[in-house]
Image (cartoon, rainbow, N blue to C red; front, top):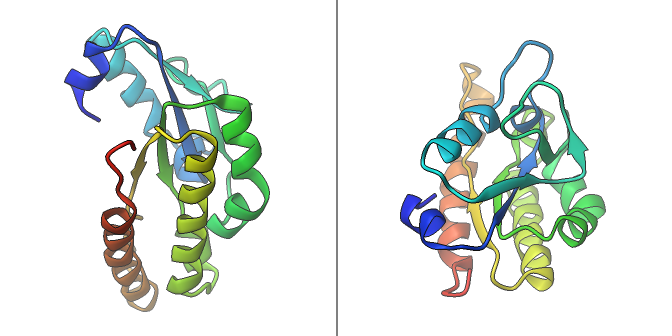
Length: 166
């Protein structure tokens, strides 16, 4: 995220973190939301984390739209419209696809789900800024080859779906 963008606005920027256990944090596993919240506070950014779920692990960024174990396909088909409508985010940080790939889903199905998620969020919030993360690699060479392909396709998806408004 661009620090100047966050500091230049007087409006509170609502950030929705969309994802799976990497976004939620599970057990003693931390998530990226806590250090992000701390960094935003340090630069005096006027932000609030939003989403339907609240956790006790992260005081800086306790709200999120993430479920441990969820697939990108499930978020697209069953959750994203409700989450976006209810939370009205200005910014969405999306980290999805890990569970799909580790459970044998095709790269095409993950890209279709991510594309659908982008479209649905923009239909609700036309000027939403969407940041799409690539997924984390693994030492399992068979799975990692799919992750490498997915990450390349995510980069293409971001380029192909970029708009000036969002």
